[in-house]
Length: 87
Image (tube, rainbow, N blue to C red; front, side):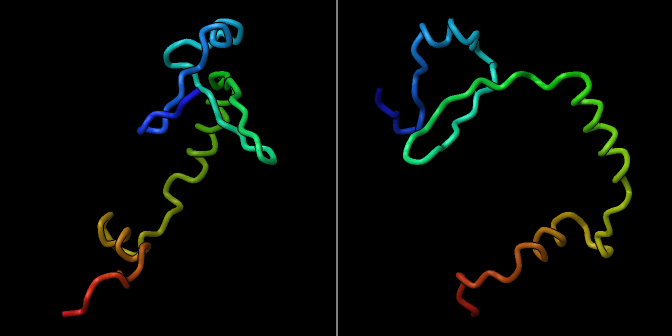
């Protein structure tokens, strides 16, 4: 199997059919030792979505941006650009 210039591989039809992998299915590449495995991921359940939503609601409004707008905060987070000449 070849990897395309975009880093893509084609999952053989027999495997897609056996695992029920269809367009839009979630999969994950897992590295173990010197091998890579493809694992099908199930869609999040309603309970998992609810748990995330509950967590998101519990932390809403707790972030302090120190008065910065989004761009200023990202610039602060990234830090100074050492790769640019100081002119």
